[in-house]
Length: 138
Image (cartoon, rainbow, N blue to C red; front, side, top):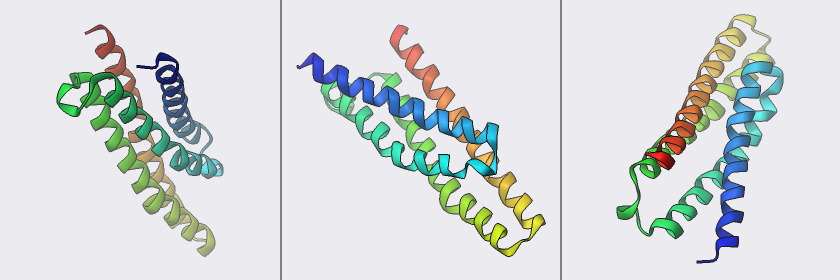
């Protein structure tokens, strides 16, 4: 096993996860003017998922040999990806439609829906971080 390559993939994975979760938290702090952060999340998401699977396969072999923490992180990561896709294709497009229609009520409803989805995604990210810490020492 080439430890330099594994370390490089681990660094990419951690940076992608930090970017994904951080940009989501940034949207929660800034609000609708920061919709472009969600586009960055869409680009970072596959990098995080693929690098995580690559690390698990190299270090533990097939899925049958993965510890509980890897399975928990994988499950929560896939849920996080699904919520992000729902937020983008459901929430962001509704916000843009409401903006173009100049309907303040529809805009408020769309922004509230999108903010809730992003908040769920941030909570899943914190849960993944907890699984990583517990899996390392548990």
